[in-house]
Image (cartoon, rainbow over all chains, first blue to last red; front, side):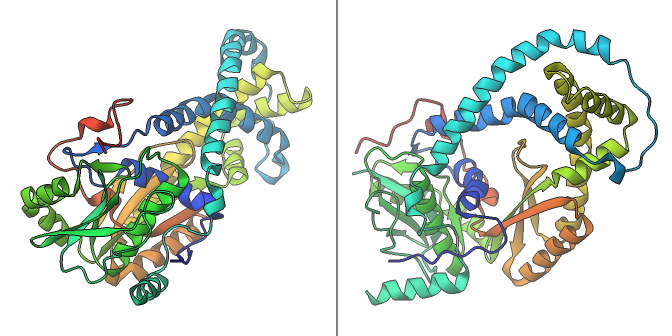
Length: 145
Length: 257
């Protein structure tokens, strides 16, 4: 049978649809203690790592770059004066190094996560929840077969 | 052959997707196991089932098909019973519990809301309200972008200010949406969003909820609000009597087969 893909709202492309419900399908829903669950080890590790690691370094660097590009004229502009940057920079040197290493790990994880997401994308025609109308017609079709 | 379980419904459910393709490659047909007033949507469990995109979608599609026609208690992805008899036995043993949940969730669907800031808008807000950050950004810019450490320092300050704004906006969003829902379930935090909240909504008043979402988008234009639904009520089935032993990392298998 064919499943008619339809999305209620503007959630973006096909992969973001699954991405957005991924944690519902994996982490919520009914669990019955008498049954086993297939191993989700890979996915759990990815989720945790992406959450923790990217939260620090990648975000900081991205924000810093974005601030550099930001047009300050568009916001309220006072003359703020220069804070004591030099002392703070020396202090953060060691931290910078360890974060550099973490940043590498984050890239690896992100890459793996991307691969996981791309996995099986050739099946894109079967996609996501669909509107009530189309699903009932799909069902009718099936009943006829 | 072990049995994969998608969800539990009333036996009187008017549109069970029997024969629909489920997990596995090629997709294994969905079967219905009935016991008393309850039914379970199952299929054979494929060998070596993994949480791949195709399998997750199959699980979700079977459940939304069933959920479109009536109430279904969705299983978490990947639940495998030793055989059909074990599923039927559980339906029998816990019939009262599942009937109660089906009744409580009848005619109700889940909408999941994820929201994040439009980055430029929130950065403007943060810079405008924080002279120290503005000064540091300006200094970095004048020195050609700043060193790695300077960037990290600035980014850290911005991130902290953004986080404060995120909490504020998450609350504002929830205040708009909550009155239009029967129940609220807050999902795990992540850096990907400032709000990840599921709302249980009566089908009859779903339009009101969708209108509230539109209102939120208008009132909080610096947010990107993503709506997913209607979904089976994943976040509102409540855990059964006990958490499974099988969820421990590394300790799982797909059943004895």
